[in-house]
Image (tube, rainbow, N blue to C red; front, side, top):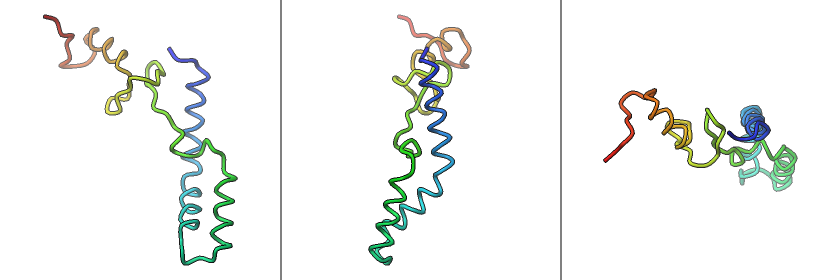
Length: 101
C-alpha cells in the first residue's frame, strides 16, 4: 500500500489540473498566438508561469485505485498488476483465471 500522503497529493494535483485547465489553455493559446503583440504574448507567459506547477497535466502520475501503487499500472483497468493478479486469483474478475502448467 502506498503512503496516504502520496495518494492525497495526487488527488490534490488532479483537482488543481481540473480547476485551472481552462485558464491554462487560454494563456497557452495567447502565448503561442503570433498575431498578438510581443508584449501581450510575454505577459501571457508570465501569467502562465505564476500558476501553480501542480496544475500542469504533465505532473500527474497514474496510481492504482485499490492500493495507490504508482508502478506496474494498467491504464485500461486503472489498477496495478499486483492488484489485478490478486483479484483474478480470488475469482473476482469474470473470465480471468490464474494460469498453471
